[in-house]
Image 1 (cartoon, helix red, strand yellow):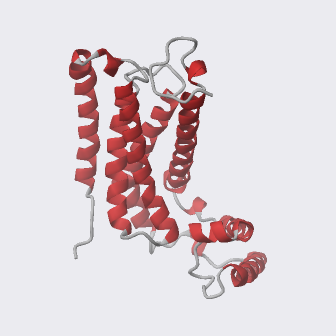
Image 2 (image 1 turned 180 degrees about the vertical axis):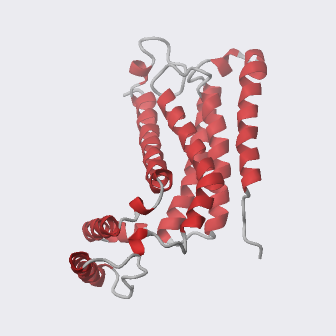
Length: 257
């Protein structure tokens, strides 16, 4: 069975197509639509936002598959991650009705940053990361005695934690998954702390460029901030509709608190 894939050209074409669709929609289509499509929070735009959020949550499935090792083919979920995220961003932009001078616009800006960073990582970052493998980085040079002792202490501590976390695993190839975090959050946190200490001692980030070292932490941070912001947005428009409307008419469905 052929491995699902999404080439760089197709990825760029997908994102460019999304930008073109939004440009045509806001310039030529939206002005001719009924007033509901230009009124923030209207039933039409409310449902559009729900659909967009659902697609964005589908894209989060890729993260769960990577972290748990379950749920199907990771490459297939990556394709769903990209397509769902792009389509979701289009619907969220339509949901905004073009009003980008309000706090929820920060969510859309975070979403745009996620898309841009993801495209860069696939089209430029991936080739840089591939070039890093099998190269003689300074981090692979023989360590002095003090560092070897520090490494030994860290590895011993990791193995002790691994006996409690996953006795069948090998320290050299083990990686924390979502299941470990859910079953043993305290031990997983200690193990992750040791991994970070080991990476700092090894100079893993210092051995590559800043873009390559920090794009993934930034991508994850933006994703978590977006999900948190999305939850806050849903709660406020649902239970604090009067506050969000600023004393004006509430044009969306909500539950009065």
